[in-house]
Image (cartoon, rainbow, N blue to C red; front, side, top):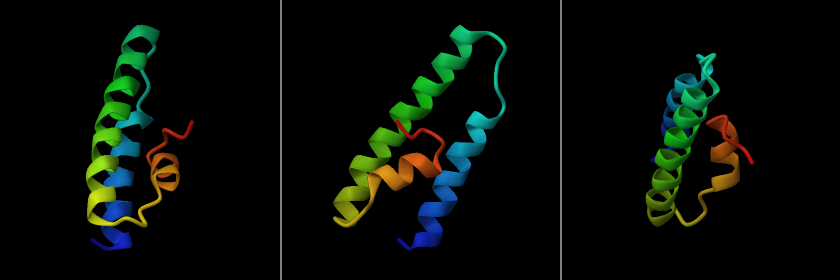
Length: 65
C-alpha cells in the first residue's frame, strides 16, 4: 500500500467522526467503535508494513491520545 492509500483510509475514518452527537453516551459509543476499528486496522497494517507509524495514523483518524 502507498501513503495515498493510508491517507484515504484515515480520512474516511476521520470523516465518520466529524458529525458529532449531542447525546454524550452515543457520541462516546461512536468514538469507541471508531477506535476499535482503527486498532484492528493498525495491527493488520503493521503486518504489511513494519515501518507503519501507528501514532501518525491515529492522529490522521482524529483519534490521537
